[in-house]
Length: 478
Image 1 (cartoon, rainbow, N blue to C red):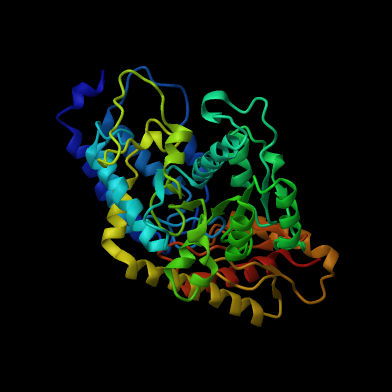
Image 2 (tube, rainbow, N blue to C red; image 1 turned 135 degrees about the vertical axis):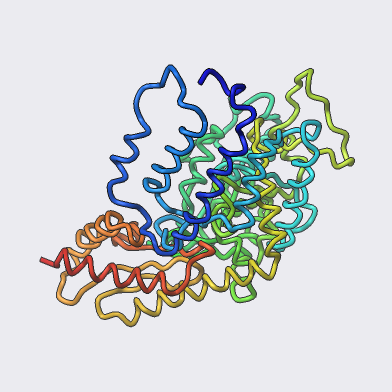
């Protein structure tokens, strides 16, 4: 095979090969293990030197499908609990295929009015879903980390402006360290965003009143007073270890009193706003200056997707626009012609709005509320199973979709429990029937399965408990 031009008339059969394989693969997800043993050898079939002579699209795609369907980690299935990861809904997956088919240049209105107008539409829909003010600006990002970069870049511009510096033009040289305060629930992605922005990963100060990370409001208030309020307060809605949250409204009051910037990490916890059962956890988010949400978590759209919402939309263009490139026309203000590559860190952007539009259009507010509430019930069921079990211990209240617990059989002393749970976590990941590894919580090695996949049911978490017990019996407690 010489080059792709030779296959210009054979595209449809190659794509049909993928479409024909999709149905059986997706139908197998509810029953197949999260990973298949022997995957390392299979992956080896795809490695090796670059071929001089290509084998053609049909042969290459067939080989990739054969190996990939067996060797992939089947994270779109209902029992992938180790990270907070959803699976693409049917509508979102089809929308993602359309995204690849149309292959839009989504950063510039001139390049694709379709992609940019749909991005505006889905951002409006999401603000409505989450109860955020319609006046907020926003942008679709590849992840929560890049959404943090976006929101905190806007905060950095605001903060530097108070020192008389346009940080986008002049940089950080000569400025003091930007004060960033949070609770012990702060996620590593927030620190990574600060690292990327040149603010320093370890400059973030944690104010916690206990080893669970609960915020110390009084100590944070004293710190804000010491910097005359010119600081960024990071509130966390949905902790990855327990699903717990900071008191968003109290932190909003604190930021407002001192004139600080309030940034909310709602990567998956923002979906608490979708259900009346949990909406109180998100109360106060509408008062934030910037909000981060992840799409490939509870929204269940394909990797990779995130969202950044900023109260003052002009801050987005201040942080990411004004390139001065001669070939880029400057969009008129107020005509709806948004160039989203001036609203966030990406210049070349995939049209991620298409699968988001497809899933929100397909299922609407009621469908997402039903899904969120089903996951709340699934998490509650797992919490009940753990609390009733004589050999397990619930380590934190179940608030959202995360259940934090450990295996604690009678007679095993405290000093041996961490090692036992670590071994059990390794065995569980190697087993593959249910994917849920361990974390460290309050000095204890613990499991923290997260239920956000649209396929997940109570039967899946019941299987998790069964498998843990089965593997523990094999390991023994000696």
